[in-house]
Length: 302
Image (cartoon, rainbow, N blue to C red; front, side, top):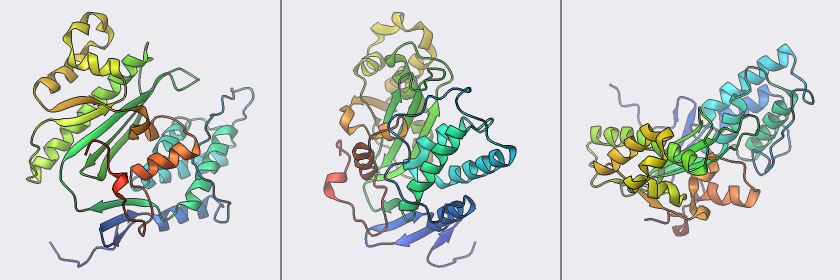
């Protein structure tokens, strides 16, 4: 091992040293993506995805040419790595990835909107500050959000104190027959990641005293997780049910309610209006290096 001194760059990430701690960003990498797309001088926009997504069918949206399709896939692959410090684009990138096999003009239009958003947020990233090392997480699902197949999108984010350390956007494999089912499957997905994070923290000799708080805005899912009486009604999600119930019983997690307006995982499950998107982005502390954290930005449960 070698002591290379004060860290500044690592695997394409720029590490800025601030008065609060560190700030991770990929401004140079994002600028290269814009250059490859020929959009270095494009006009910035305030959100990466429109509030109402296009529902164009195959008959109204033309396929891209082979050359354009190759460039589309190349840019999407680069954007996937950019989500390491740009969690605010994760939902849009996930949606674009679902069309990599046969991209259409509507997908290219959405990609260009995303690149215009990046133009105005090149230096945005996530901070790492000194804080209490207590793990908590948010889980959410957009029920039947995909108009093409009516599958739901699950979203999850985890904080260590006030530091965002893990997040995920995943389209569910099966169609959920109710919002409760979609939310409960999202809880199970989040629980898996929480267990992994707890074990990782133990490897770093950081004790996890007590269960990890998992916040959800669906009252029915919380009741289902805490009350075994509902078991007979949920045979179609029995595996997820038993898994989450076992984790609660073993005091690995505790599922608590949070108001929809304070549900930070909303940013990872659906397209939002610009004011709500920017509000949740600020709550996740995604900002430039010179923006200090305000007391009002702390999670509501702390």
